[in-house]
Structures are given as structure tokens and as C-alpha cells.
Image 1 (cartoon, rainbow, N blue to C red):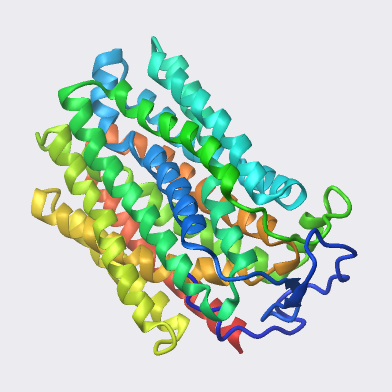
Image 2 (cartoon, helix red, strand yellow):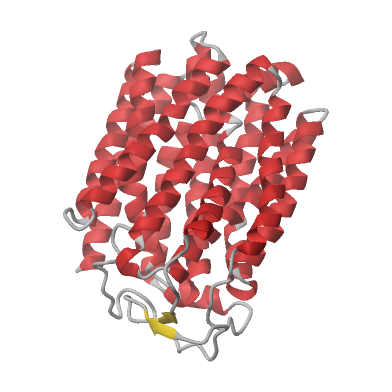
Length: 422
């Protein structure tokens, strides 16, 4: 959700100076609020937004569906939790590392074309996940799925950035965020229930089927006009020449590690207390519920609260959430944790994400992609680091660490955003 574009201004300290594009694929252009020239476009049609929401939904569903199934998959495949966690952490790592590849491809080939290509690969990876006979093939298949599904959310956000004026961009971005959160919530509920009562293999089949549908349906989505891409690595030069891009990437990496990395262990922490996979999935799903509810609140606060205030309130929610989880791994405590983490994500991440979309408008897809790299690499590193303590059921110390890390995260994000505005 765009919470800051309506008030952003730029100067030399915000983005590196870049030469104007030499050509466009569309007939008209308009001024970007950041001072750069960008393509003009009519308001985003409802049908187009629905397709983007579906693409983001299925990407988040696939990314989070394994969380409540970790212990069950380990038992059925006869491997320890640390081995199964490689499928989750490998997914996150591939998801992050492929962001710049898809971002560069999107700036050169087009947003819609890249989404359709990536979804073909995602469907094949889902099929391999379904038929995997053992842990090794499952890990490889999930890493491939992460690599291919990595294109959907960033491309959806970039598409909105290309086609919707900054003054009203917060509305479609808010709807996208709601769809992303819904994908997270549905994944954890459906995955836990289906894995418990039917089979975890069916869970991996569902996003594959939706991916096949989208490959066909996205043909109806018009490609937005964009600047000529120029040299192959020109978008990277534009993006990485901005010191603010590096700063926001560092914040994103810490955010991914603090929130997403430790979020993965809410369901295992409950199951370690004897809860079923279904209950653990339902509790984890409340993260999505909290995110959806908070997204509506954030939308109403935009323009009334500063981005810094939104970030700080998000950080407070995250710190309290992990503090609850550190104090107790009971069902009520982790329900509160999940809801607060969802709220914190909507307040903090939507503000930082919106900041990231304004940093390099001349290479927006690559800039958003590099932001994603940092976010998901941080998530993968934290989830892998915490696998050992989780195996020993040392959840109290793990969640306490996350609560402590929230402090520097909030300070860095708030101070940086305040200085960027100044």
C-alpha cells in the first residue's frame, strides 16, 4: 500500500541523476511525483486489478503454505525438522535472489510477459513438489517454486506504480496488500487442514493449478507503457547509484530477518506444545487477518499520520508480539502474537515498501526487485539460523531475540524515513 508517495519530493540526495529515456512503448508521458518523467496511463481497471491481486495471492499462498506442514512432512518423509526447514529457507532464499533477475527482465520485456513466463515455471515446480518421493527432490522443487513465484508480487506492485498516479496509488496498493495477506491467511489454514486430513501433496498442487489459470488469464492484461531499457545492466546502474536505495535495502534485510524469518516458527512452536497441524495453521493464519484489518486502518491514516509515525507504531506492535511469544508459547499468547505481527507488518512494511517504489522511478521494477532481494534474503538467513534452536524447542530465546531486533529495525526505518523527507 502506498502511504507516502503523495508527500514525497526529491532532490539530489534522494535519487541519482539519470538521463531521460530515449523512447517509450506508449504514446504519452507525464511527470512522476519524484521529478522523473514517466508514462501516462488511465486508471487501473477493476478486471486488471483482480488479476494482479490473484497473482499476488497465489504467490503468498505458495510461500507460506509449508509453514504449518513442516513437522508433518518431516515425519512422513522420515527426516528431522532441520532438513525440512531447508525447503522453507531455500524457498525464501531463491525468492529473494531471483528478484533482480525478474526485475531486470520486467524492465526489458514487460511486466505481464514476465509474470506469464514465471508462472509457467511455477506450475511445473508445483507439480514436482507434488510427486517428490523424498526430501531431496522436495527441497529442490520448493527452491524452484520460490524462484519462479518470486516474479508475481514485485511485478504486481510495479504494474500499479506504472499505471496509477501517485496521488491515488495508495488505493490499489492497499487492495494488493489485502490480497497478499489473504493469501498468507488462507495458506496457513488450508495447508494445515489439508495436510492433516488429506495430504500435504495436495496443498502444493493448489497454487500450481492457479498458476496455470493465470498464464492464460493474464493475456487480457494490457502491457503498460515503459521507458526503453537501453543497455542490459542500465537499470542496475540507476538503482544502485542511489545511496537511499542501499539504505532502504539494509532496512528491508533487517525487517525480513526480524519479522518474516521468525514468523515461520509460530506454527512449529505450537505443535511442540502438542497442538495439531490444523490448530497451528489456524493460529498462524491470524497473521493474515491482522494484516488485512490493519491495512484498512493504515489506508484511513494516510495523510493524517506521517510515515515515521506509521513505522514506529508498526515496530511497537512487532516488539510486543514477539514479547508475548517469548513469555509463553500457549495458544492465547501466539494468537496475540500472530495478530500483532500482521498489524505491525501493515503499518511498517507498507510504509517502507511505498518508500522503495519512489526511489528509482526510471527503473522501478529493478528497484522494487532489489528491495525484495534484501527482504527475502534476510528472511531466509534468519529462518535458517533459528532452525537449530527450533529443533531443541528453544522458542523462548528465539522469540526474545526477535523482539530485541525490532528495536534497531524501528529506529533505522524511522530515522531514515524522517531524513529522506527532510
